[in-house]
Image (cartoon, rainbow, N blue to C red):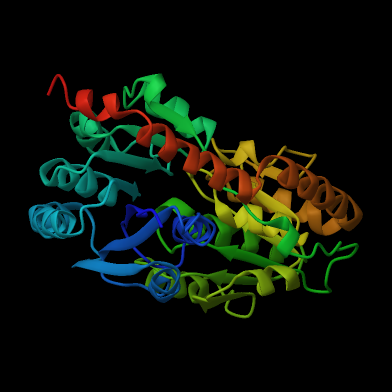
Length: 380
């Protein structure tokens, strides 16, 4: 039997999130007779770590702190040193990284450890994160191939990060619709359930959603909102919900291992984010038949067509979000029609099997092109 090709996946965290789920779906479907898999988390193991560990051949953690910004920068050299040691010991052929901190730590460590190929997945479009952009551009020569999660992320990376177009490939998120039964929702609950599944941080714009719920209640539209997740803004959100008198309408649900059963019971899936890459939660909602109301931002508009497969609202506007929610609640048959059309679109364009095939094709292309390794760091 031939020796398996070792791949080392490095991810910033193993908390419950779209990127963590995407990595899990990839490693559970990749050909394990061809590839061996080691998963490593930059941060301390999170709630999703066990599932990743069970799916991989080995699981590691660099045990770096959760905090970002200055604390993360201070800990960067330590993380690189630990990772260089692990990579030299394990000698993977490919290092494939996910999310910014892992992308930077991974490419630097792989360079020093002499790893043949480095792939970085770009999953978030952070337009105003100029410091990250500078670091990414400065170290881009250490990367063989970038995988962008959406065309919007690809365009941004070419234009703003100055990544050569031939070096970046779009590989969208995927979902296995055949494993998820579609249930048409022809009417709303008496108090419609609005589900938001997102980390509690500025990007996800939970305060905008709270304001939108307040506007709905003022109109006499009584809803029950469920916020799934965790994060640095949790305490503030609890205080804000109580201060607005919405404790009977908005509930913090914590982290759950599988959001699908909750989506199946919800009337609407809501994504109020200010920026994204290509949110996995929308694919999951669409797969189960839960109508979607989201913000009109790059990446999201590649999944949801406004008025056809969901409702898109102005980012940062509570009024626009409230209007979109009210429309869906007041027009349940139209919401059901959009949900059915969305499911057909996702089945056609966002198959997890195509996502895995496209990712493995990148691996095979690198493995079949030894010249890529010989020239990868020229010019540095």
